[in-house]
Length: 608
Image (cartoon, helix red, strand yellow):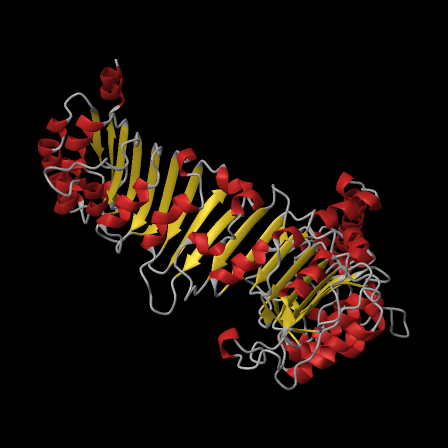
């Protein structure tokens, strides 16, 4: 410490004294008063006492630091510390600093005040040993996200330095920053394990894809988002053999990427003669196309060479595929496939592709058509003729969950299997397709049906058609919004199913034993339809439980409707147990009420 000639510290030096340990803040009070009249300052005895107090405090802090260093959390072996840090590091965390959790006041990177604790970074605040451990562990610095914020170059340099020789997981969120970071990253392409390239125009994409011209023996996962505006929609392609000028062909020679297992390509032009790497386990193609018209058989052949493929997702088959006829005996096999997704504008393209493919019987799937015209709006349009032998799960389904809107319907068949349809630009009513469930499922096995969504456009004939195809359904759950719920009760009332007094067709839904409906608003039409339904069902078949939940505007309306319900509906089934109570908290703003009709007692008596 600088000192005056007499060896005493100057007042300025005294004010800058810091604690005896690294990282302790400066002393809050000066040891020597500011310069002035020395006769007004403290005495030598007071200064001596104060100096001794400071020394005691410094000794206490030093002992405290030693005490903290002996605590179990600060004496963990490095191997365990590394495991702790890795436990808080997830595969898709977003790097050692989250892209949304940074702000840069005065060119100093700091966590944003609103950012919640992220990954392993907060653990570095436990102590200096933990920070030093994190700082020198290469695997913690290998996940690098480059986004639009400034300072990404310095973060990239830091990560490349501290990651040492560890494999790198690099994600670019913005093309401008990606181009700027490319020179820094190029010397390290051989150790990139995961690479995500952002959506870019043709010239920018060509620059970014120059990395793929190098040998990348470590690359395990590759995602490329091309230029969505360069790939024309299928209906706008006049010449299927032509590729718009400026398209970049993305070729992935297997010899250059011997470890590639996960490939995701969007809006990319594929070279016809370059196969996919056979090491692939997951392949996702979205709105891609070939450089020229390619037969379906060639596309299937390139897939068949990926013997290890487990997950295949085709969000749109390659646009310029020509669907040549492929006999069933010549269908390709993907023996290890576990999940298959095929989504197309036209249902017939999905069916044609599936007809040339053989997958394991336990493979889960999702097949969908977005704008199925001119194909019929039916689930059978999605499937090949021999679908029951190709997808045996369709013949063994017992429970179906249906989600429906005004333009879309989705069937969940269990085990991760789905069928989806959307109506085309004409907004064709989607409900009639539910009447064709028996064409794709063994409807005699179905005992449980669950529906969610909008029922406002469902007509009585739609409900009848649905339940006519489900002769053994016992449980029906409906979670809905919209109006016209009374149409459901009218459709299932036997009297409404008669076309004349002389003919009485088989009632629909007579196997139903349990009905639960939630959503929708209570109205007088529902009251009348429900009364008719209950009266007719008591004489037809033993309905065990009816549970309804409706919305009321206020408590007064609820009490009024309850009185009417008890007076008009309850007498039609005097032996049943009825509950019509507002849920707890109705006065505090809840606007739904549960109406439960338990008819099990009545049903048991009838069966006896």
